[in-house]
Amino acid sequence: MTRQQHFGWFLARGFGPQGWGYPSLDWDYDWTRPEIYQDAARTLEQAGFDLVIIEDAPSLGSPETIDLRVRHAFGGPKHDPMLLAPYLFQATRHLGVVPTVNPAAYVPYTAARQFATLQHLSAHRLGLNVVTDTGSARHFSAAAPLGHDEAYDRAEEWLDGIRLLWRSWDHGALVADRATDVYADGSKLRAVQHRGEYFAFDGPLNAIPFPHGEPAIVSPGGSGRGLGFAGANSDVQLALAPLNERSVRDYRAKIHDAAVAAGRSAADIKILFAIQPVITASAEDADRIVAASAHPDDAALVQIARKQSSDLETDLTSLDLDKPLDPSVFGAHVSRGSIQRLIGDRGDDAPLRAHLTALARAGRIADRSGFVGTAEEFADLIDELGDWGNDGVLLWGDFHPVTLHRTLDELVPVLRRRGILRREYVDGGLQANLRAF
Ligand SMILES: Cc1cc2nc3c(=O)[nH]c(=O)nc-3n(C[C@H](O)[C@H](O)[C@H](O)COP(=O)(O)O)c2cc1C
Image (cartoon, rainbow, N blue to C red; front, side):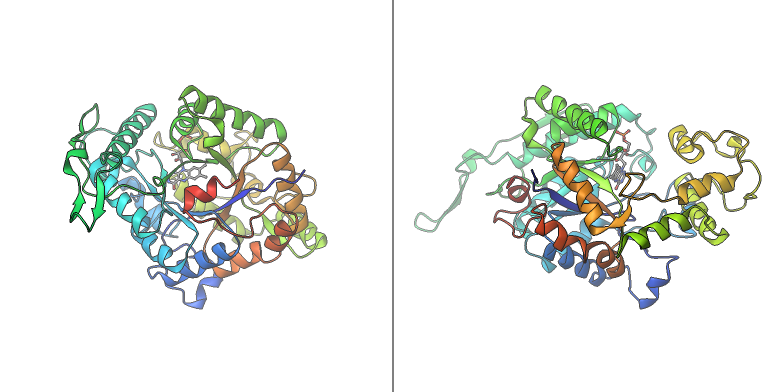
């Protein structure tokens, strides 16, 4: 039985020079101007997407490795997605827009007021992708960065505080009655006094309440603590996990258990699994791409090495492709999990070329070995996810028109014909559309 699902797009390199290094940028798109993002937002709305999420990191990373991060623009620069959001709202009528936000960067009162303002300006289409990365801590305070779980504790206190402020206007506080000439009843505004572990502030908030609900909370953390945070707090969880039945069902059960433990219902949270498909015109094209990916040329490997060098804050581009990769090149600052993802089970003797070639290798959707395939094959996969109770899918990529059209032109009609993708929106903004099915 086909199940209708929600669709999101993750702008994976954030509000930055996302196309750098790719010839398609020679169309003279200016990443600092709103037009390319507005065009993409209109396309996604026409396609029936619920939301677009804009990746972000406020920092260029540690001082020693900044050059690695900016040289090919994988790690920065990035402008502030919160300030891009109004331009996308103005270009669209229904699409939800979800900038990434780190609680380290905004004190709760400022956050509550700015988010409230955007929620009203957008007719209830704001979402917030709450991340807990502590790599940017030094830009906001001289204190030592928090540990992994403490950063989640702070995020929960931050969100609780913001919600207290959003709810500081009781029912009936906003009167707006011309007959009595009363705009608001001050006796119905709560003082709010918060004295917590990480934040201390007073209310009430200098912004009016929301007639159609609060901004949607989105979260991407995949650790046990991250899933707990999502269950307790989020309207949408961005999930990265293998797309087999057991993994999808297990992931969903963990979030749902956490939601119920926090007094919510499993239906309160939509889980979108992240996928970056390569949609081809024919099965033969897909076979060709997959076969070629097993033998990448050196230029392709160098491009992968550049991205890895930025992500791992370690220069892989100056290493000999045909010598074994010595794990001691990675400093203590690099996460062991990230190194493991590069090296896999190939062992210390394997040359760098083998690791990069493994990252280049693509697989076919049809045999579930990867994500290259036709629109029909991809729709089969999404249909199957629906059979396992899935709520939706997060497609992943840049905002270049070529990327969007290559991915969506054939796929959208196929998904609509099958009844998987919405044809129209309901009124009421992002939350209303997330709850529509
Ligand atoms: C789909 C997806 C999107 C993410 N987007 C961001 C982002 O924009 N900014 C960021 O700092 N971290 C981002 N992350 C990383 C997570 O926020 C988090 O830092 C990471 O998953 C570690 O948390 P965890 O230990 O709970 O998994 C993203 C992760 C996923 C899976």
